Image (tube, rainbow over all chains, first blue to last red; front, top):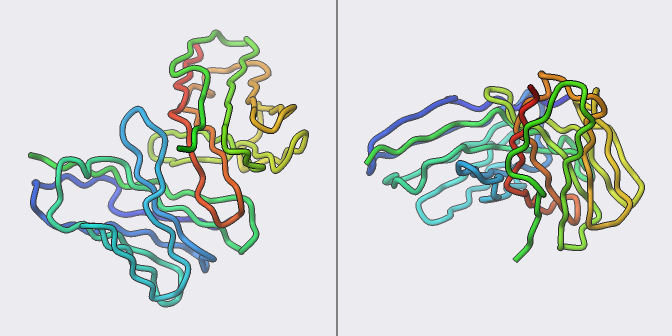
Length: 112
Length: 112
């Protein structure tokens, strides 16, 4: 079973600061998805990365997929209070595999 | 907009009761999933279904069963509820294997 480790588990920073959270695996990802979950809601997909070395940007969020496809990072520039939430990475070990494995998440709090 | 609806946001049941959690999706997706989410453990897959009347065990199926009689509805059943099944339960639907999962808002279940 593929294991996904996310770090840090908790992060609390001031509004306007930059931050990076990480997702690491014991084995190669076929693809990796990042979700954000706000209190009282289900997770919502932010991005999917597929190719090693791939970088995707979503406004102030930058997602990077490691060259070896065993790790990924999410960088937020000039954090805003609306970025507060639980950030989850998820992956399937093989293309065509129906099951996703989720990481344990990073709980991010942006302080006004 | 895609929609996955879970019938209850909060549910309180007693030990030994048979509990039904209902999930309905309007996306005509073949794949549906049930997860439980616990602090520090992330989302763990209980069961999933890739077609009507088809089901497969996830990572933690013990104490649970599922029913998929119609494409749009996927039910999770706790045969005899126990206190260690107190958790947040999330249902999701998905089309093709590399498409995102769309989640409901969750059911917070307490077993007393």
